[in-house]
Image 1 (cartoon, one colour):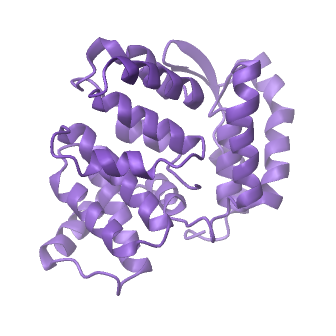
Image 2: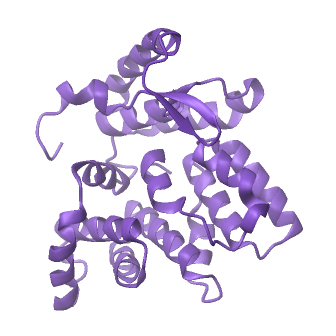
Length: 275
């Protein structure tokens, strides 16, 4: 199940976890999520849920990790998103990602209504911007599926100042359906196989940020499978020198990585602002 938001956007949206219900009990799971260790994060969340089934933050982190592993996360997100017992600082992010996945499957009107709910109810500035950006894009893409109230249209116009080019790019990717997305079936299968079968066996050795698998996923999503392959190869060729010279170090969790975003290497492929 392709395009979820990139790791960068997910962290921006969901990792303001201070005050979430899990407290210090989920510190390890949060660190793994920040480091984009999706498989390990999901495993640790499932262990936590075996001890306490009502840990809603663990459910959310497990569902989002599953989404990154190209597993079916929609049922788990939907369960969190509509449960009135779940605190809004967990329920609304779950509802947001439920809406994105529903949109990918062609369930347009419920997705737009869910995005409207998140946009109007959240107190989180980043989630407010993301939900508004996604809602505005869906209304342009499918204007006949649902007509929002006039006050929502006015609020979207006001909120548009928060929609940075990076946010618009990642949101556009997140709204792509599996049938039309650049990250086609071969790309999704390749990334999913590596993350679920190979990486757990050899361990996570990548010191780049984003990781090589996430970088490749973004390349497939943005440029398609055929062009994504040489972009992936270019990353592998450059990786030793970047690490050797300690270029652009960043701290993620408690580890030092070396920043190497896709935007630094594919700008020349962009043909228009709406690419």
